[in-house]
Figure: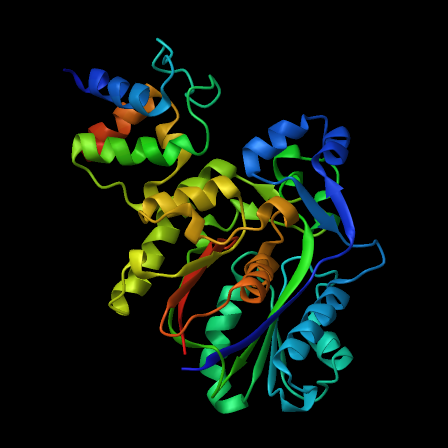
Length: 310
Length: 77
C-alpha cells in the first residue's frame, strides 16, 4: 500500500456568517448553529470555477510536499458541483498545475469523493507513481438556485482540499480501505442540473448513523484495531451533530474527531481533505498511531480508510 | 404490557417529550422526534423487541407514527 505524503487546501476569502445567511433565508442565526454546528462558511467569487479552487489546493499540497509537478503520475479530482456536464475539471486542473499529459480522472462524486479518490490512489500509485488527489466544490452556486431551501442552504460552503499519495514515502502508510455504494438511495440526496440541492435529511441521517460506524468497525476489525486505539478520526465534515453521533456510536470521545465545520460548513467532497490539511499542519501523524478517514454521501457512497504513522 | 404500550414507552424514553394520543399522528410533524432522535428510536425498538431492522428498511416513513411502528413490528418481530 502507498503513503500519505502531504495535504493541501484552499478556502475562498469571502466569509459568510450565520447572521448574513439568516437574513437571506428567513431564519435565526442561532437556529443554524444549533442544527448544524456551523457558525460561518466561505463562498467563492462568482467568477471562480471549481477548477480554479482545485488548482490552488493542488499547488498548496505540492508545495507542502516539496514535490514538483513533473514527479506526479496521475491526478484524481472529485467534485459534485462542477460547472459542466463534460469535460469535468480534472484535465483543465492538471493543465493549470503543469501536469498536462498525465492521466487526469474526474470523480463526479459529492461528499465521499475524496475518500474514494484516496482509496483508488493507494492502489494506483504503485503503477502510476505519485498520485495527486484533489476535491474541489463550489456548493454556493447550487444552494443559490430557486427555490431556496434553508435546510440545505445553511449547511454548504466552498473550498478545496488535496492529498499527495506516494508509492514509497510519507509520514503515514495507507493500510486498508473499505468502500460501499447503494444506488437504492440515489434520489434521497441529489443535485440535478439547474436545480437546488435536494436532501431527504431524515433518511440521510438514519442511514449514515448506521452505515458510517459500521464501515469504520469493518475497517478496524480487518486491521485488528479498535476504535479506542485510533489516534484521530478525520471525517467528511457534514454536520457537527452527526460527527458527535458517530463518536458516540463508536464509544470514542468526540474530541478525537477533528472538526472545522464551525468555520467552513460542509464543503462536500472537499471537507475531509481540508480537515486533514489543517490537522496535519497543527499536529499530524505520530509513528505507529492509526488514523481513520471516513465519509458518507450522495449515491449513497460511503467508506473508510486506515492510515498508520510511519 | 401491550405492543402499543411498549412502543409508547420506547418513544417517550427517546424523545423525552409527551407523545400524541392519536397513534396516526406524525412523530416528526408533531415535534416529538427530530432527525437525530430517529436513529436512537430505531435502535431502542430493536433492543426492546429483539429485532434487527435491515438498512433497506431504514425509511423514516416506516417509523413516522405509533401505528406505523406497530405495523412494521407486527410484520417483522
